Image 1 (cartoon, one colour):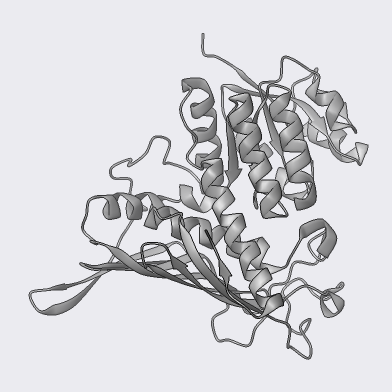
Image 2 (image 1 turned 45 degrees about the vertical axis):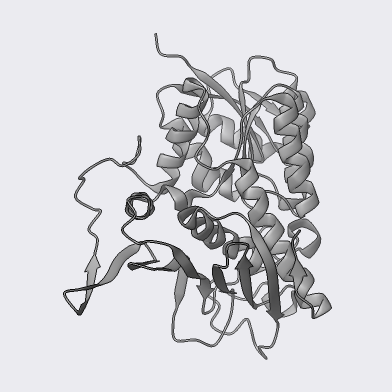
Length: 361
């Protein structure tokens, strides 16, 4: 008989309903047996749609953690709650999938890493852009040595007018930031993952809040966009210890002709380069003295570069995570890697506030 993994969901809001619960419930070896939310009606609705008939509903996550039959917990709450709930869950003997970003602060992210090491439980973070077919191909291409040394990257998370205005997205205390911590976190994770480089040396960053009418043209309307204290955009230069550079650009609202570039990056190597923009992967190199560009078609199957590479990134993420639990292997996103992402993002905010670069030891 196939082993069944019993999962508890903590936080039954938008990301739970839009990503995690549909993807998990589609897996034959998963049962969603507990749902927790501070709004009981939300937890009850999630149970009715995705749970087992005897699934339990909670408003206090600590009560959920007492259930010894639950092997895995998904933490899908506002950013400020990621660290305390994750740490409690790890010490309660659960493996944890925490939605991005890892934590509101870098100190909290480091505490989460320490808790995972102390308990021996698996901890991963919901960076689904790693699980795109294009990302799989890019990773294998890089690891084949075809690009040589990757010494420069552009990390792109840009929306022309796309400020989220629901839930707690505009709550600075709950979330800890704007597009840097919301969408740049995805692109930076993908960039560092493809570069296989997690050793920053210096970060120089600047946030921007300049638009006269940031709500104008916003795809989700106003609803607080015009009064949020959060940054609209930001730029950063990240120098890694091996000398590689990463130029980061992000925005919820900026005057540009590009409507959106999310989960996107450009990598430049000593032998070749690639760009992964909005799920389109292009390779470039000089061949027989001519510039050659190739668009990679990942829509027609081909080699499954990693197990479980079919389906949407959310579905692939869920399958790979559960496979790691069942097979006792490392998750694709390691907590130490996600922690570095949080440290760099926090350094951008710190650098912008102080006007000075942040130096990493």
